[in-house]
Length: 236
Image (cartoon, rainbow, N blue to C red; front, side, top):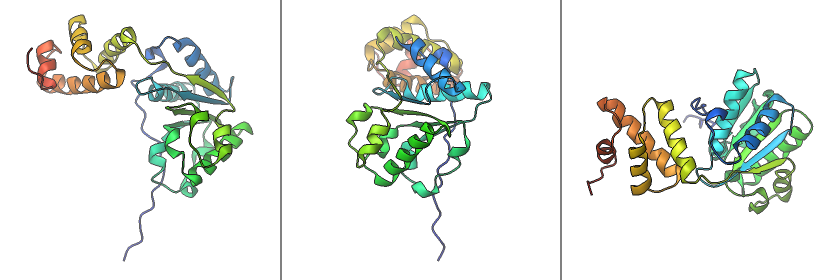
């Protein structure tokens, strides 16, 4: 009978199409400036980002990693939802980085072992061992936690709320993201997407990925007929 294989927490792969240059929101300048300062060790040692789906949390963590790489700073990024598959005692290596970044940190709320672990992470951050960026959906003070000290530690540093994207921002994000994927979205196609499908960034980005796949496989421009085909939509 073989021994069970241990789950080891590994950094997630970076999406280098995300950068600070293509982050779009009404408070982009303030948010980006604070994250750059943290990465370079010139500002806050702990920054928490919170906001709803599609507000750009994962984008900003990847952008921070991209910025760190370009400036010779060692940043490791993890998804807390994946960390739950591992034992906190097996999570190491992160303490040899300059910046630790954790997405979806609210996923560990209610798990005593991981709450205790990140309580210690914040303490070590405050001691100057490394810098810490985390992202979650709700405000830290609203988390339902087992350990009150864990919740309070998340409020020690700078907390930045990410505003939801309005129609104007979503249109510009779609245009830029399509350009990064290697195709162009016309005003007509964007208007069609915004009119016929959910007007939120998460849904529109999912549609964009599907359009990218079918456009590439068929070597066709992205037009309204292609959108209908890709999304199994019938002409109105």
